[in-house]
Length: 305
Image 1 (cartoon, rainbow, N blue to C red):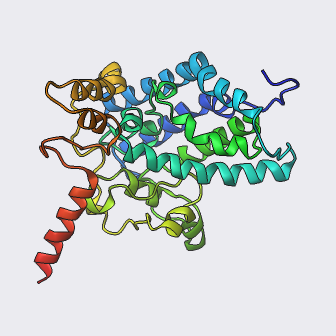
Image 2: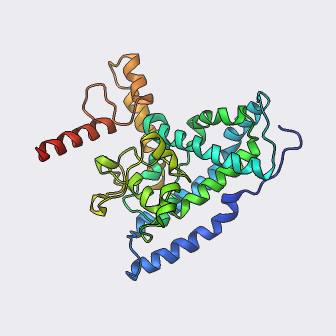
Image 3: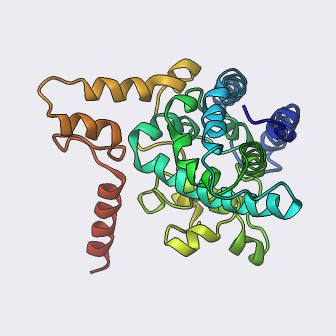
């Protein structure tokens, strides 16, 4: 372990008692038709259970990911320190790394096998913000954080700004807020931007990966504006049909192993089912996001001719 490791508040743990309060408030006003949105009781309960399970898994198994970062710290080439400036710089740097990691979670099926949990609800509300994976410490996703630690962000500081990032993202999971002021919409991630990210419309797939700052998506060409709200359909391309928390948590990871273990596949095909984009199939029986977007664009071009 790191000697004299700094102590930062466990942001999500401290904030977690407030999440049900805000969910109950939104649920009430949605039911009263005073706020926009939809709630389905079984879905909302499943989301809350998933959130509680995620918190338990982080408390019980977080040492796997954090332990790796602590071990990695000895190989750092810089040390940013722990000043206020370092905290701000780490928050911005971590958000950029989050953008890249989030993209990887959509592009690599093994990472998607955990991240799909968050996308699997067909409703968009504060409850589904809690719909988080239980197996994230087993995917190796933390490896993508290595550059930040090696470049001098202390693991404890990293864990703190990750908590701030996740806390920020809670409020953007709502249909009750339409748009923020234009300057805010340009720089920051907002409910409008994140609704697009959760939409299954072909034009919305693999867009708006931001955590806090939407500016990353604008810079790297992955930004898509909300447009017509009629295009918003939440969930995943192949919708799940269960409210069972254990199936929500583990079905996709089990499916990865089942697909890769099919008889008669080459090594490359087996690895494809694990590390290629979601929707990969050796016999072209399924469609990746890139295929779905290409089909949509071709159909749109035909309609405009």
